[in-house]
Image 1 (cartoon, rainbow, N blue to C red):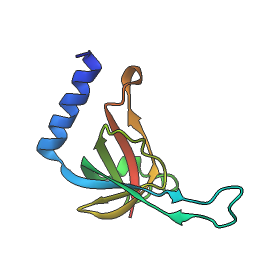
Image 2 (cartoon, rainbow, N blue to C red):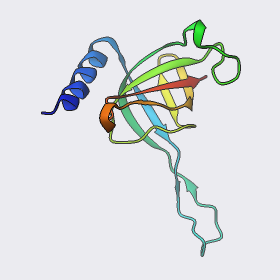
Image 3 (cartoon, helix red, strand yellow):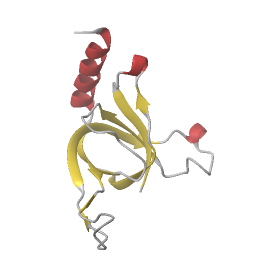
Length: 118
């Protein structure tokens, strides 16, 4: 196993010990196409994930991009890419990802580190 593979494993172990099980919901549309005039049907995809959720540190709040009441969410590396407007369901409630981010030394995603808003 590579060094970065070991980092992914260690991160998952820490999240398992200290985190919670939540869900990442990605909105999707099924159906609809240029030749089909219907807009398609919403079909969200839900993925279970280990995560740690905590209030954003006061020093990071700028009132524009990061606001009071926002949460920092660290999620294990998954087989999906987390994007803005995805939904996080956790003990803090249902949150929308506003600033997705990832911890990816040398291009290997070790964990996702994002800002989410309720």
